[in-house]
Length: 218
Image (cartoon, rainbow, N blue to C red; front, side):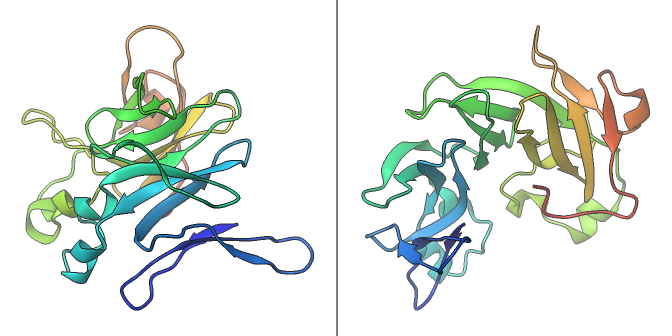
């Protein structure tokens, strides 16, 4: 298991074994603000976000973009942090068992993936949900959320906070307007925009999994 800490204005990345005698290992040597750690499928690397600790100390908020400025990785044995790319509105790194790419939720492009050197970005799926009225303007500042996909001026549909590809790469799990959906990822042609406002009538097979809302899809 991998986890991050934050104590006395510094943070580190740790792993702990879940079998046998507990052994905690500190991976990072340089303190910082580290978020969203994720194991590669081969479990030899951990990808995560590195941000400005000062921005957290300055009370800019957990979801400030400065908290996730860089996308980086470190060996599962620890050592130096390796730079991949600037986050560029991309977050929540995760992986499949079918290839060695890093998958991310892009705040404009939906589900994307890149190589470990930050190159060859590919778009895989865009999703949107129902149109909501009134409450967003009054009660919520969605601009503060790192993963809220921005709608254009003509489309007021709800956009995903997160899109996660399945381990086998065939489908995606998404949180949209505090509900959880699953949708098939088409493999050919232009990157599709799939509406799950009525999941049973979506252009590609999709399903709404929650009835009264959900959080933290994994």
